[in-house]
Amino acid sequence: MNLNRREFIRLMGLAGAAGLFPRAGFAAGEGDSRIYDVPAFGNARILHFTDCHAQLNPIYFREPNVNLGVGSAYGKAPHLVGAELLKHFGIAGGGIEEHAFTYLNFEEAARTFGKVGGFAHLSTLVKKLRAEYGQGRSLLIDGGDTWQGSGTAYWTRGRDMVEACNLLGVDVMTGHWEFTYLAAEVLDNAGQFKGEFVSQNCKVRETALFDYELADVGDFNEDTGHVFKPYTIREMGDLRIAVVGQSFPYTPIANPQRFIPDWTFGINEEGMQEIVNQARDEENPDGLIVLSHNGMDVDLKMASRVSGIDAIFGGHTHDGMPGATPVSNPGGKTLVTNAGSNGKFLGVMDMDFKGKKLRDFRYRLLPVFSNLLQADTEMSSYIEEVRKPHLAKLQEKLAVAEDLLYRRGNFNGTFDQIICDALRIEGDAQISLSPGFRWGTTVLSGQPITMENVMDQTCITYPETYVREMSGENIKLILEDVADNLFNEDPYYQQGGDMVRLGGLDYSIDPGGEAGQRISDMQLDDGTRIEAAKNYKVAGWATVGSESPGAPVWDVVADYLRREDSARISKLNTPKIKNVTGNPGIA
Image (cartoon, rainbow, N blue to C red):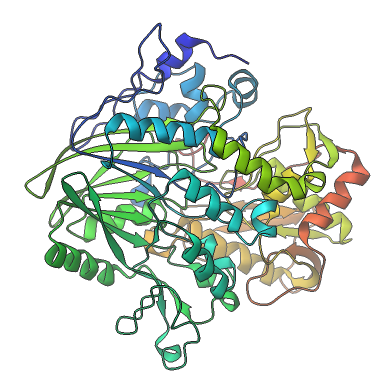
């Protein structure tokens, strides 16, 4: 559908968030076509996207209605949803701005405003913003989770996205799900990438340094152990800007270590300070930014403890934050941003550097509406070509969605329930478990569910399913462990995902409770209480430790949907959430 111009102009008039410096909102000229115009400010423009999860084409993506903050994170960005998020950032409710940043009235608004993202539309926006700011004065950075998340990325081992990013003109990137390919494949892809892959916290294990088989590949530094360059210096007009990379710290824990057996990560806060100091002292840049895949809460803590960083451009937790958050530290202040996911947003920060200091800035998080941006011809041709060998499989219609199918949210999503139901029924199990991944696109009710939709939800390099006996005690331990990863008051102990999704099992949770004491009232769908000493038949997928024996999860879900013909949520296994009354992170 065509967008009402006044609605979009309202979006482009978003108020700035309160912060260290004055911030300009979106701008557009009424009565003309400059709806994505961003008035130039300062002397350096940083364009940032992250967590696109290999979505080359426009998609639907519903923002969460549950993103709880506990402890010091209570009531603060990014732990705000719906009307509370709009209020915090000074955004008027209703219309396209509400749709861009919240779950409110999602399905009706999605049918009105259309899909978001798509690399062809993103490319048009990037080219426009770079051209208007001036030759060589902008930088396009990618926060990672780019080579995973779609069928074509899986079948090409991420190479389709490498070439797409080359066409897009990405200058610098870091990673997370990139490391779920084999180490040699990661380095090969990084070598084909025309920009620079940076990571200060990805190193070769000390025990592997002596006989490291990939020592002659890529940017490995034998003296420091860095697999990639920890930082790079980029020329931007008359300026020199340092860009430090920070990969996801918990990669070998959250994902299989067996794919990258010689590599280690970690938050590496001391190493970050050392690299920042080194870059500042040896390179004397005009400014220094960090391209991070920590997750926003971790970035906020790191910004408070590491000095010398002008801004952190973050990812991993998929938080689409309309404003930059200023954080005080011993050396001054650092701006922290997070640019959402699935290619839905492009962050634009115009920075004014003088005397090696950031004096001022303007920040906007631009939603990429495919109905409003003409598709770039070159990128469109590439996408069509790279998808062509897989179209028949991707376009298979498996069933019809009777309900809105989405994933994102702390506790469950309707597409997650479909996956859990498929695992439980196909595996003839009492209970099913599915990881709390934050990627995965949305299907509107009444629309066909295609194989591509299923791949978008399940496409990883360790997709094998399992059916096994688990004791009630072990099931509780799993839930407690994931809950502590999500709700630990110390961000450095959070891994950034959501709660494990369940089929056939209900429970209660107190997010603010003590570790090991958050989960209670576990019972099967029929009301039978879970007994600690009793065994239950459990189906699941995506085991990190070792490969499971079953079929890939997408085949299991596809078989279930083909037989059902329509996807209806008869019961959503969402827990009872305790002690969250008034928390602005839940609606």
